[in-house]
Length: 337
Image 1 (tube, rainbow, N blue to C red):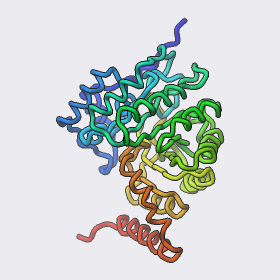
Image 2: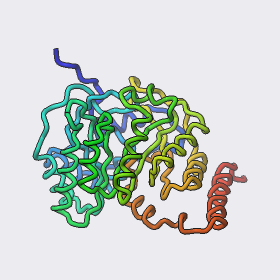
Image 3: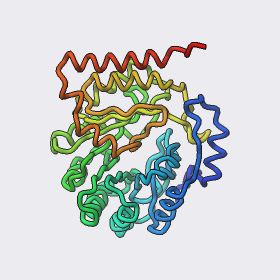
Image 4: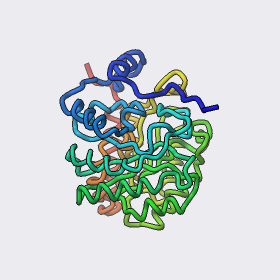
């Protein structure tokens, strides 16, 4: 009997607006939904090329902003995931057959969108021997061939610990290799039952050891029941694995069937988390309520490449971090009447 798909598919624009209005969120998480001309054009490009984006499938709150600025994250290997992580809105079930023409269509969409930095992710494909690594590699090469000089970032699954599959992706030489640890060690089994916290760290560690020239990146979502100290410990684990770039964002419950939000972090707390990450030596930390793994990805590359903090001496670095914390403290104080 065929496995039934969960009813967590793509939202229409109208559904997304109703969903945003129905959820009670702090003021800083209120999103202005506006489908401008670029948004509509990108949506048409995706439909013409029969492509999927994680922006739509995962119900990203930034879709209108990002698409209006002509940035999108392509999701390859279909739109049905073999896993059912409790935070994720992407459909799960039995995937369709591989589309071997997909890499070429992604490259054509990159041309049509005029991108100079592209982010490529996928559903988990535990049904494939290599987890889809060969398709990742083919897509990277197709983009490079069609748009020489385009930066390529990949957000990959864990390939179930198949390190040969990881090497296939590394051999295609993406500019950034991203794999999300998602949450703290204690909550990992609850949040993503088919993944393993230590396996994610091992993937990131192996990637950096095999290709130190490739930037590595990971992401933490907060608000699922973790403590502050656990977030800091996760940062330490990621730095020990050689991760260069870190993103931290607020978890938002896609539907009532998903994990509930345990708490909303304030913008001030995200400022402090950014400072804590920079203090630990990440080349760049993007932290904020609506930050997602590929949010402002092209800007992260520029900021990480400049290494402004790492180029400072110890005293100047401490002064910079102290200024960030002071900014957070000022933000936390209520404005005077």
